[in-house]
Amino acid sequence: MTGSEPTLRTCPKGHQYYKSSDCPTCPICEEERKPKTGLLITLSAPARRALENKGITSEEQLSQFTEKQILALHGMGPSSIPKLRKALAEKGLSFKP
View (cartoon, rainbow, N blue to C red):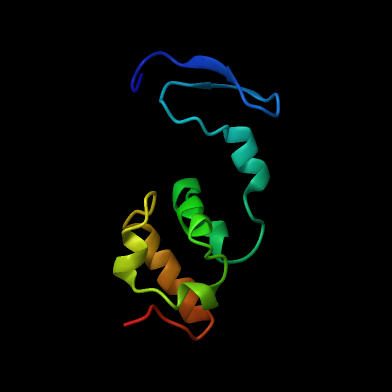
């Protein structure tokens, strides 16, 4: 289905949206659950979900992992690492060596 014509979909909450990929994520629900403050606000939705699925929601939790471990998470891309480094540095932290 990737790359095909957009189809109208309805999520379990009743939001209607068009998507042309196999991704089942409702963009309206994603926007509603996007954090307003904290570590995860600058990340894309897939990167944010990757950290959330690992239980990482704070800089302190993130600092317990290496960059390599974070990059291995499904949904995490290399463009997120500089954002995460900056967030860690602002709190006086860094990735685990």
